[in-house]
Amino acid sequence: MSGRRIVQIATALAVGLTAAGTLTACGSSDAPSAEQVARIKEQARRETLAQVRRNKAERDLRKLRSDIEQIKRERSSGASGSTPVPSTSSGASGSTACGDGLSVNSVTSCPFARNVRDTYEGSGGASTIDVYSPVTAQTYRMSCSGGVPVVCTGGNGAAVYIR
Image (cartoon, rainbow, N blue to C red; front, side, top):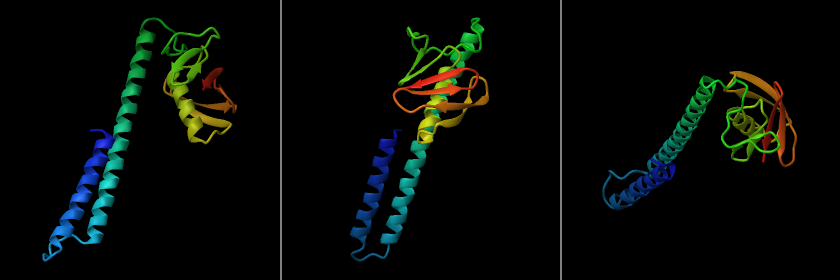
C-alpha cells in the first residue's frame, strides 16, 4: 500500500471519528472527546509515517539485493572485484555512469557511489565524509569538493562525481 494511500485512509479515519463525535455528542455520552480525537489523529499520523519508512526501507533493501546479485554475477563471470558495477556504458572520460547523476572512476562501484552521495547530502555538504562500501565491507574517508559536479575522492583511488 502506498504512503499516499495510507495518509488518505488515516485522514478519512480521523475525519470520520470527528464526525461521529459531533453526531453523537447531541445526547450520548459515548462520543469521543476532542482529546481522544486528537490522540487518534496523532496515532494515525505516526502509523502512517512508520509505514512510509517501512516502504522506503523495503525499496532500499530490494535495491541493495539487486546490486549484490549484479556484483556476484560480475565476479562469477571473471570480472575483478575492483571493477565498478556498470549501470550504463562507460563515457569517454573513463568514468562509468551509475544513473541518478552519479558516475565513478574505474576502481569505484556504483553502490559505493550511491552511499557517497547519500552521506555527502546527509552531511549538508561536508568536505570530508566517512562512507561504507557494500562491495568491500569497509569504510573509507572521502574528501569532497563543492561545485558542479561535486567530486569526492579518497579510499583506494576512488572517485565519485555527483551532478
